[in-house]
Length: 193
Image 1 (cartoon, rainbow, N blue to C red):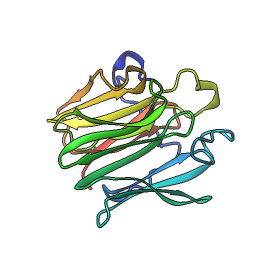
Image 2 (spheres, rainbow, N blue to C red):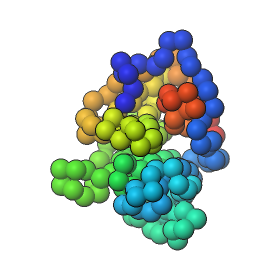
Image 3 (spheres, one colour):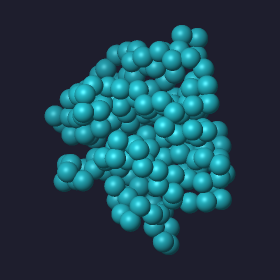
């Protein structure tokens, strides 16, 4: 959750709790739990990796104790982002043929679903869980950050990603990282690969 649906004024930069290892738009990392659908040891256990295989179109997830496994197949993908919800269900956002798409666990049908084209003309839909601390389990939310035009926006899972909130204008680039900082605020880095 972002208090007041606005960026901090003045900005409150701090180091990220778990530094990003992201180096290209088709690979992402997220520090999360022990296994898929297994939050039993909390959400700060190990580094997970998502990579998109251009030749096959597969979205591959792995972790030190979880073998690389294909989650689904899509074509013409140019950007991927990985996160997990409180129950360690994958939350993957990606750009496919210029259209932003989400793959997330929807509690209404109680299944992983695709939400296509909810963010038209966005090039960098970045997924993150805003707060992984056990004490915040009732307040935490999956957030989706993206740049469209020259503006930074976000959406949240509690609204089923249907409400767009403007955070900043005059923004150039893509969302490279959005994650919890050591000062317990979500930090966002926008730039270019």
